[in-house]
Image (tube, rainbow, N blue to C red; front, top):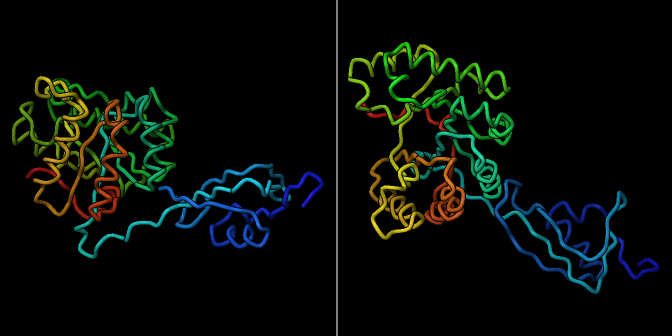
Length: 296
């Protein structure tokens, strides 16, 4: 104890709960423990509240005030051998002003996701696009413009739009490795903007560029919140749509469609993550799937 009545504790206090608790108990400093979702390994000290100060020598703690240790919670079990408890979160049309908060939430829960980005949005938010990759998520292609009439005019138009996306994400330093190149058709792989023959031609062309193609089977309708029933608020509609499509999904491969340019999605993402976690599921990126997933 120093002249000010503070107890000196070593820097290891901030390492893990197993390290911190004996140090606190030996020094006679009261403490409280709480847990949070975090990307850090279970038991790591995520942050610590205490009365005092710290320097390179450790911490000087007022023993009259309890130390609060917030530890990283226990992680979910790994995916089942048959993959039936794996869920794939996907976000379309970003990055946007909401994406940074979405990345923060995913990081807090230790959850990976796939972001089907637009080239024009990457140009507007290049640092966010790079962060998607740096945070361990999969940055994927949704083309550049999302303008149906122009990109679906013919096969060459779509492939040119995708090539522009590649050029843009390469320029900002966010292009994923070749085996992880994934693409989602704006509006989905079945559309009134093209027929069966053109669809197959576009799929063949995308495969030739090294892309795998993915649709979805669970959604929140966050892209069409204006379609909600009269008198229903957008957040209730968002949740209700998700629950209905989740419960009605008959596929082992569960791919959730959301949009990271929608305020409701930013706000309700923690609720969705907890809903999925509580049902025993874990999360992955589409790079982990061995095969494509789109309407045949």
